Picture (spheres, rainbow, N blue to C red):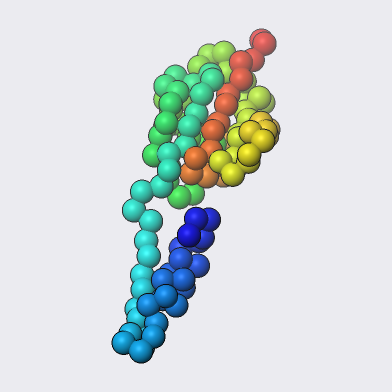
Amino acid sequence: MRGLTVVELERAIHDGLKGDYLVNPNVSVAIVIYRPFFIDGEVKKDGAYPYQPGLTVAKAITLAGGLTERASTDKIYLIRSNDKTNTLVPVKLNDKVGPGDVINIKQSFF
């Protein structure tokens, strides 16, 4: 049952349990741990960090200790976890980050 949302998974489990014995099963699904996101390049502490709902690029940089003195705020890229081509997409500081995403901060030339 990969790729389902929480609501879709609840519905699938509910429908699987429903029958003669369980007439209207009550099913609740919650995410306990998200996949981490990753950040590398011109940050002080690159690596994997726990994902938190509502995470933005700016918050991710803060979790990684901030930018280095050589970092470019114009050359920030993101690889979405569901992108099988691993395409670097330019992003801004207020763009959302998802679980499993990879953020890359490039170096500024000046």
